[in-house]
Length: 198
Image (cartoon, rainbow, N blue to C red; front, top):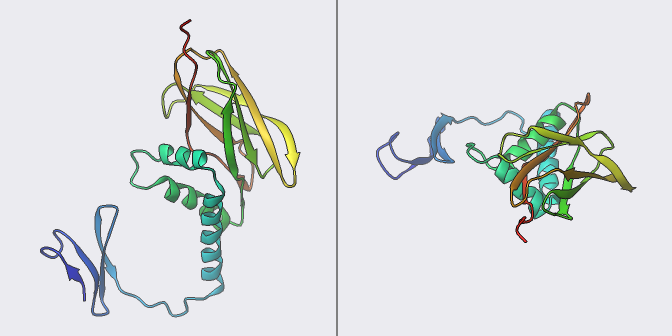
């Protein structure tokens, strides 16, 4: 039986009616779909898709708080969360039997009036491009990150940003250069340069 908190189809209904319709709400949207029982919920393909989803969620939990906040900022204004965006991208890549290059533990250090040092850990040894600017969503400047150090199966990539303006907020994102069979990117990070006043 569906739980109705107002006139059906107008306010909110949740649950199933018999074995025919299922009413639900998701992020403010009222939806209804037909009720179906899968003939075999444990086919090889279904198990693979579920395993990919689990892997994607586990990757999310490997991100630092700064990394997760970057994905939340990246999804601002969208009808989905940073978590959903990240997990969706990773799962899509894994569903195609391709690789997701996990970028995490981003750090911004040595911030001055006109420079900053940025480092990030990657589990795939590729070419990473850091794009940045003073407006979220617009990154007219870019620099190729260099491999600083390697350990186990991961590496630390770094970039030195120079020529920045004092007392200014910058936004940046890091992406793996287009590579067949591999994808990877971050959300949108932010930092502010030091004040230029004496």
